[in-house]
Image 1 (cartoon, rainbow, N blue to C red):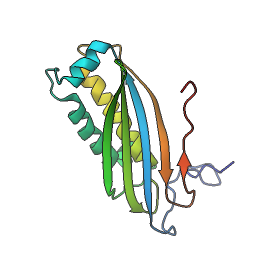
Image 2 (cartoon, one colour):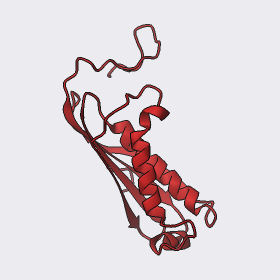
Image 3 (cartoon, one colour):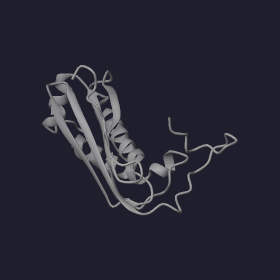
Image 4 (cartoon, rainbow, N blue to C red):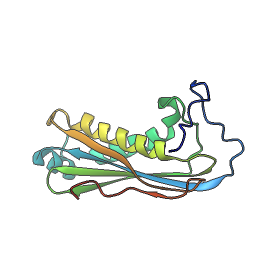
Length: 162
């Protein structure tokens, strides 16, 4: 098993030194699910909430979150991200799927940025819709795939039951 890179030999926390790593193109995709009442999903689809277009506000929140990941996660490097997309899909009448893809040409990966983007986008959906559905559930936040860097490509296995 690989060593935990954010601890030194004495167990102290550290930011990983990436100065000797080569710059490569790196891409990460993450996803999250938001379960809600059918009426809530219909309001989102129809842009019927008084606060505005839920998906566009959540998209902007996710993009902003990806750019601010190093301010939120203590040992993440501040990165000059080259691209972020946040996309939404309706699955059935109670499920919103959120996917974020983050790209960089750099010395470290963008997995945390993609995970942060979907997390904050999902929280934004909750915030905008909580007046009509406090029982919404955010779940299955996960890295779907990543490429680039020394560790190469990662592809998540389908979740159990799918």
